Image (cartoon, rainbow, N blue to C red; front, side):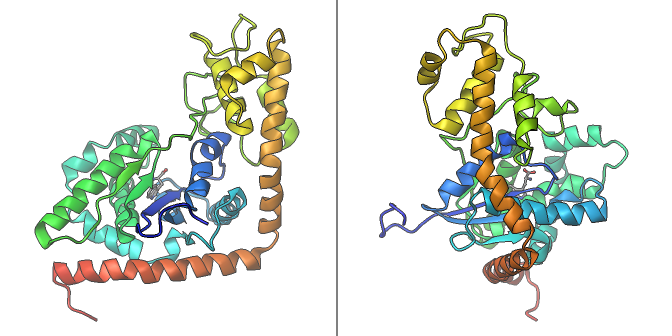
Amino acid sequence: MSDAPVTEKKKVIFSAIQPSGTITLGNYLGALRNWVSLQDDYHCLYAVADLHAITVRQDPKVFRQNILEAYALLLACGIDPEKSPFFIQSHVHTHAELAWILNCYTQFGELSRMTQFKDKSQKHSDNVNAGLFTYPSLMAADILLYQADMVPVGIDQKQHLELTRNIAERFNGIYGKTFTLPEPYISTTGAKIMSLQDPTKKMSKSDENVNAWVAVLDKPDTIMKKFKRAVTDSEAVVKVGEGKDGINNLIGIMSTVTGKSADAIAAEFEGKGYGDFKTAVGEAVIETLRPIQERFNNYINNKDYLIELYRKGAEFALRLSQRTLDKVMKKVGYLPR
Ligand code: TRP
């Protein structure tokens, strides 16, 4: 049960993740673990953002599997649909509908300034589609439909959240208070996990070097191999320090998965080589991911149960979001059905 005082209304949190095919250790330690712990103190709603995902071309068969796997993996990580409605974005039609309306309250200039749009249109220069451009208004719809107070996001999504607030303020300014203005939720415990090959960069599955990242579903021996190959330095001292990005990252990972402080870890490995340390980090990560992988295998082999859960999630999300959409449509001047 929650420790939050009963007199205070629980705040609403919304977040979503794209079904990209690979959820990394960085996603888990940096974001998903937080989503799980927020469930006790807030009204959380979570979604698999499959509408966002088609802004880049998807193979239908692979895409279908990725959506289901993302859903199963988030459950395996600890999203509890009894506490937090958990649904698939495309199953809740209000998202696309509100996104259209919000598009008409979002300026071309604002969308043009989004750094993610600029980056992505450079990377996929053969497919700079309108969806990629208006992606932030769909994200705004996701958030505003549930009157979310807070949105846990990484630094890469902060600009989109600021735009969401601007859109909401604009709409409220024209029609009177309709939307809650969402704040970014910056976690105090979420770790920033860096690439194992270039520890000055964030761990990302789009890194072409597969040794740079660990997937939550990587096999234990793959995980161990990747940690053994992790880039370090020539000092051979396990201790946080300047110019020791690789070791700092490994200590950060070790600290996050074991709960031990960086000092305690340094003391434990005093006089030991990097080889021993890397093996220990690999083992700790393997043990952290093992129960998640087991739960994932159970879920993914029980498709009927997954379907039951995501249907329930969508039903709940539809009911809640429809209230906001109805209000919006009425204010804009649409005739009631
Ligand atoms: N755009 C986010 C990402 O790629 C995913 C997302 C979609 C999201 N809708 C959201 C995140 C709403 C927070 C709130 O990471």
